[in-house]
Image 1: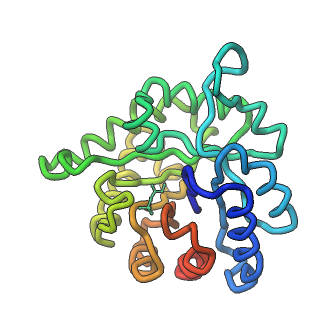
Image 2: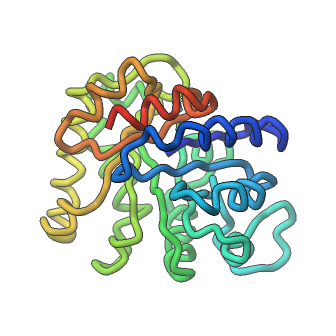
Image 3: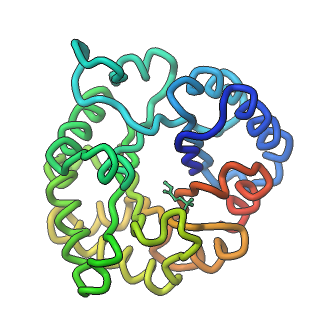
Length: 245
Ligand code: 13P
């Protein structure tokens, strides 16, 4: 999954999409690709990728149905242009836009109510890892933001573990650190829900994934894919990462 963040105007995105579409045949069919453009680019991206199996995903949405929320976008607006999946809880939303676990929990509920799939992001900061609190922090984020859902809702959930210290820093979690956390996340889900649900849910790793390190990260048993920022803005790198799975 490529999270394009606040990058690419329309022309730049069209170039990126052309690059992806030109070589998409090289990606094995069993690899699900997703891209998350800005709100203004969602509709053109959806139209451009209509004939492919690349899903177009929103980076955020508001938790309310409609109303006086200047500058915000609702789930029905997204659905009306064909968008069925939304990223919720990205660390930049949490830290820069002050989205709390309580707000994220509401967003998750609203998305599920609209039948949308949620890519739920979470991850510890460097200070948490240094204090050996990373498992606790992640558990708290999952409990407060996500674990209010029902068993059946898990079919609509994709998890993305993104340690904040690895996002855009060039520093990745080692494959072992990613595996250790992903295994721990499955344990948390087993405890709160069931082993069946824990085994089935896809857990992506995000944080400075690039062609050079994707293969060893994706090779880990509990890593089911990646959420890619910077490297997803270059078609060749994005496809190379996709082929590493
Ligand atoms: P980078 O791949 O640029 O580190 O970004 C990761 C990310 O935040 C994806 O959501």
